[in-house]
Length: 199
Image 1 (tube, rainbow, N blue to C red):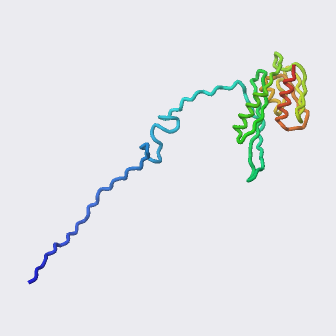
Image 2 (tube, rainbow, N blue to C red):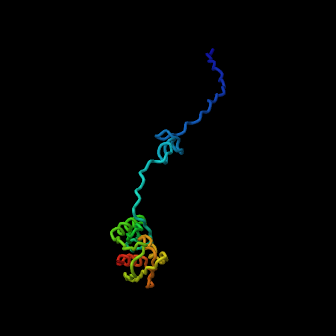
């Protein structure tokens, strides 16, 4: 007689699935959901309000860029580019200057040109009507310019001469360029020299 063991019958139970739970979104160190801008921050400061900046002090001189040139310099490894800028500044009350600046970008070149123009500023002797007292003619490098007073005609000029005359506050003149040069730097400098020589 042998001992027999009774093996309990295997019970088949259908597993009950746990309710699906949504995974919590990943958060960064600020607690904001990635991919979204955090509340109350961002551009303009907290709450999107614009930052209070001190108003920039307005310069007493008005400026105008009359010439921008890109200059290439050949060096080992290729070309290196820089910019040359000519700027005219004036207060339209008798003071005017022309400056030249060079830099790796135009903003730096303009800043240098403005500083150079302030160093070479002249004061124009004007009449009560804003004109000059007599004819004047000046040669600067390859440019020869002449300025003649002409009552009641305003500013009759072209090229860089008009910009210089307007920034100097000179009116009722006729200005001419007597050479074929197109170099605006020498034309502007000749115009400034002519205004400085007017007495």
